[in-house]
Amino acid sequence: MPPTTLDAVVLENLVSAAVAAPSIHNTQPWRYRLDPATSALEVRAAAGRGLRHTDPVGRALHISVGAALFNLRVAVAHTGWEPSVRLLPRPGEPDLLASVRPVRTDAPDPRHRPDLYAALWRRHSSRFPFSPHRPPEELLRELADAARAEGASLWFPGARDTTRMMRLTAAAERRNTETDERRAENRSWMREGAHDGLPGAALGARDATGRLPLRDFSGVGAAGALTARFETGPTIAVLATARDRRADWLRAGQALEHVLLVATARSVRTSLLHQALEWPDLRMSLRRVASGPRYVQMLVRLGYGPEGPATPRRPVREVLETGA
Image (cartoon, rainbow, N blue to C red; front, side, top):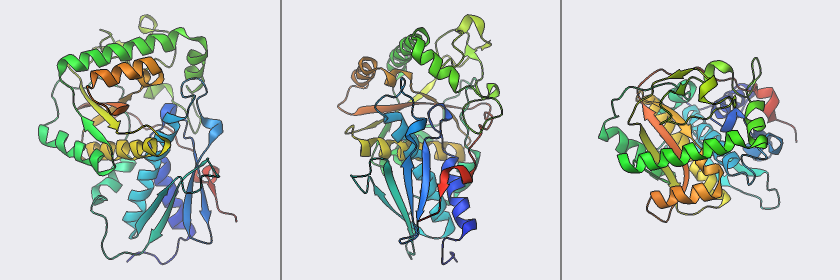
């Protein structure tokens, strides 16, 4: 039976689940407030954790918060309630991105599968080489269904389009490492012993062939980094939305995390390729490669390989407000 109130233990578990979500550069750009009048959890942007140069309009911030929102929904459902979600509930408070109110229900939402709750604690990005084996088509369809359930689309380009997308990603990566402000911003989120950012152990190696351009947070380039041979034909999923507004970015984040948790539950590893989406012209080129009117929000690499180490998370006390 679900508890009758949001007591301190339940509340801490819900927020812990939310902050286990991925975020760009592991910035964790979120904060939470419990509204005592409605028992709703407000999900707010932590604007000071935005990336001024990499994400000037806040699209990646919204996607990150959307991923945390999906985790919160999964945790609320696991506790025995139904999450009642409102996106951008008060236009006069632009930092208030969503609210989630747990309500009693006799008909749980079938999207909140029990295995996703266990997966959210095990999900880690893996920036390591994957095996050459492509996930089965049945699983790829399941991932596409997960994105569709959140109002987004997910598809898997063929080899030629995948190569074109990797070339656009590589072009963006070169720009990022050649632009002083972006290079410095990336390096500033390489952190050891902190509650946020990326420790060195999570960065992995660079692809020795240059075909798979993972982000170079150090800015030293392939010549000065540890290298390894990555899969020659990566499985890439393209996540997109029909429109490109703030609410669509939040939906994209929820769809992304739904996809990542289903993949984790099926023992498939994932990493994210976002660089080409950080440059308007390259993002438009990605859209042309995708051959459709939808807006690309994320490229997801999928495969079988090392799980990838956990990255740190800020403690609940730093992100949760409980006062009136």
